[in-house]
Amino acid sequence: MEDMRTRRGADIASDHHLVVANLKLKLKKNWTSGQTALQRFNTALLRDTNKLNEFKITLNNRFQALQDLLKEEETTQDKRKGIKEVLISTCQEVLGLKKHHHKEWISIETLDKIKERKNKKTAINNRRTRIEKVQAQAEYIEANKQVKKSIRADKKKYEKELATTTEKAAREGNMKQLYDATKKLAERYSKPERPVKDKEGRPITEIQQQRNRWVEYFEELLNKPAPMNPPDIEAAHTDLPMYINPPTTEEIRMAIRQIKRGKAAGPDNIPAEALKSDIVVTTNMLHLLFKKIWEE
Image 1 (tube, rainbow, N blue to C red):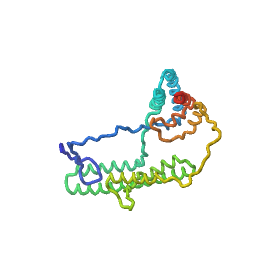
Image 2: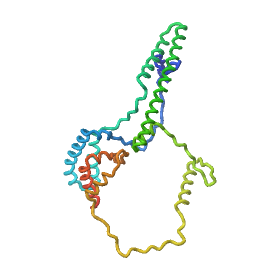
Image 3: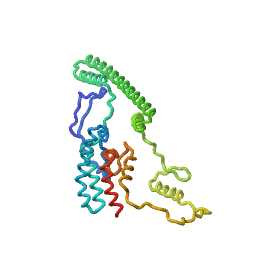
Image 4: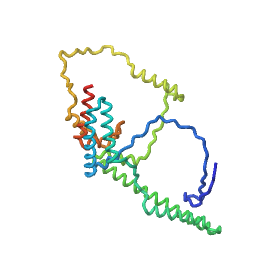
């Protein structure tokens, strides 16, 4: 432990002083799997008409420049990477990353009371005599009570507004808003861990025995004996007609329209809103890729 100091001016709603020190530790290296979390784009900006038009123009310009390159590319992976780069770079330039803004449910009045409480804390440190310190300490305790009371009132008001939003979303059938509001009300939920049990119902604590129990369970579940009297299904006399032509632009356009908004992006990190922003351009891009895949 190095350079320990006492910070008397810090207000932590306590009669103790904050102690700050430098610790010198030797930590074990944490080996990670190398996977990075996907960064979500701010697709809510596409609701604005001007931003949507800007996104369409940028996407169309980049696709026009990509068309000549796609004709020269020989492998399917190169075409896929080129299309992905166009969509991702357009999202980064026009939309940017999504910022997590939590609602500021603490009111201005509460912030003023917190500031006043901090001034009371400073007054305690500046008092000289014991009587003055006792009086200042009493004022600080009262200010601290008012801060906690005001915070509870703000929290209650915020939860009431969320409950009203949830009821309104349920009446209107807005499932996304209903889910978001319910998630904020419920906050974090940690699912209790349930231990693996053997056939007699006794919990298994060792890791290897738990794995063996899972293997045994799925072997019994999936390896069922064959039926005694299997049905005799005759083969069709004629082959059924099958559509073997490559996907058309109309089929791709219909598939894009059926994609739901507000869903999490896949491993490629391309949001559905980006594909649906300009269906004509995205249809042409995907048609070139699907046609290449079909031919191979």
